[in-house]
Length: 113
Image (cartoon, rainbow, N blue to C red; front, top):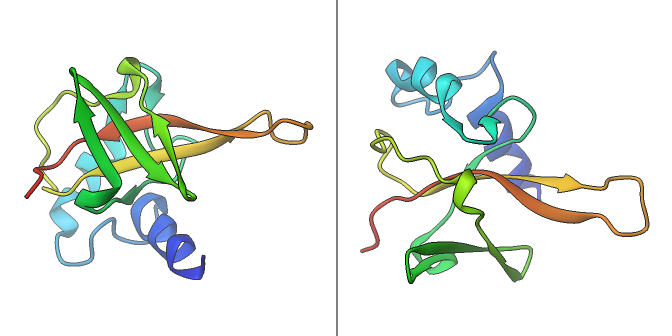
């Protein structure tokens, strides 16, 4: 869990680089958006490995917290992936209720391989 928190901080904290080896991508990360809005506006993003995402019939899903979550079509980032790795920006919906659940704010496919 601590590793995921560190990745969140590296990818969406304005004080830290999104990718320390590629600071030239910081402005690009900050501008990423899906139809749902800016990715880093309130959701923290992180990279997912190839085994934790898949595409079937033109739709994506990701494995988070041990379960598969369907990526809404309006969460998919359609511009070219300059980072090269698959990224997801999940958030907890209905926080503070009896039924909180994870939703996807943005998803940017990488190359499976």
